[in-house]
Image 1 (tube, rainbow, N blue to C red):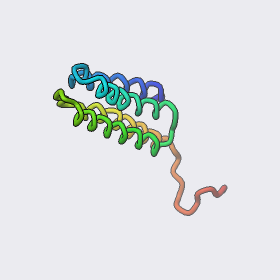
Image 2 (cartoon, rainbow, N blue to C red):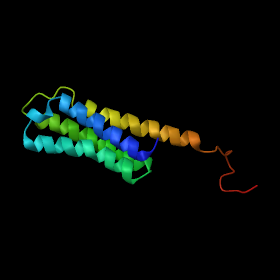
Image 3 (cartoon, helix red, strand yellow):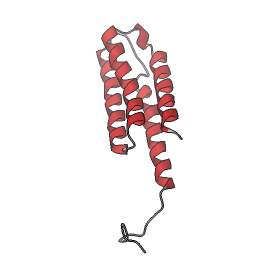
Amino acid sequence: MPKTLVAVCSLVVAGLQAWDSGVLEAERAVQLIVLAGVVLPAVAIQTTRDVRVRGRAVLAAAGLMIAARVLSAHHLPELALAAFFPCTLVLLDHIRTLGGRKATPLGHQGQLD
């Protein structure tokens, strides 16, 4: 799957989940935290192929969503789920990438036949 499509899917679904949890009723600072949590994984997907960077971005987004939920005076019931879909996309994209690589026998990495 092209990384632009993965990034757009991440943005759309995480944004819809945040909207569905009622983030528009929360304070402006909480909305900005959620916005950063929604955008961060999509930016990481678009800018790098390194799965470690993408994983850290997803973990940071989950932390931001949890922080927003704790800091908000309004009840945001399923806000943490907004970070679950980008995490799933990053994992599935990584698995797909691993499936496309040619396996090499142990002890023969970097050697030419």
